[in-house]
Amino acid sequence: MKRFAAVLLLFLAVPGAAWAQLKETRRLDACREVFAEAMGVKEGIPSDLLEKAECVAVVPGVKKAALGVGGRFGYGAISCRTDQGRGPWSPPLMVSLKGGSLGFQIGGQETDLVLLFMNQKAIDYLLRNKFTLGADASIAAGPVGRSAAAATDAQMRAEILSYSRSRGLFAGLSLEGAVLKQDEGANERVYGEKIRARDLLLGKGREVPKAGKGFVEALTEFSPPRRARR
Image (cartoon, rainbow, N blue to C red; front, side, top):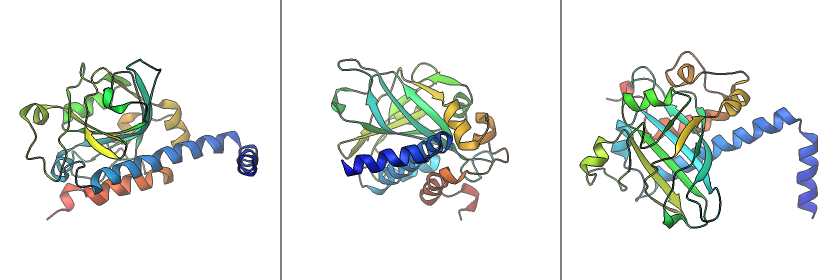
């Protein structure tokens, strides 16, 4: 009861705009945590696939839309390599993911998702307001482990590779039919104004906001800018 009262007092003390910004900061913190854990476990995302990826999307805590219905929904963020893949990771673009079946293995648990965008064509889809996975852009469940050597031809040809974590385990996952969309309201709260995906993901002089620094730093830690490598 005391804990509930403390939370209620905090809610009443924080202005609405500040509370909304705090919500987006927590979302970006969750993106950082999920990505770091996906890269830090043996049966996670292969590091050599991350090296080839042009963009990374993380959607933590995807939930069921309704009991017995395949649809899901979640909210996350995307960052891309700038300067035609040679520069630093971009400021994050806030996105939503809705619809599509994530498979029976999820059960009633929330599921964390990581998507690797593997080529320029996949980036072009990101610059739209929204697109459908599997219909507009090809997507496949990504291979797991330290190396991508076990990847199939279908996986290596896919524009997007998907990974999920449920009950602590990461695995490849099909997301066909899900719609990935820019979360315009969240972007405005993070950046203080309306923002275009192009201005963020292509490195058009935008700085990484304080709320997104942890997420971008995690991407840089596991995959630094290509032109910085020897």
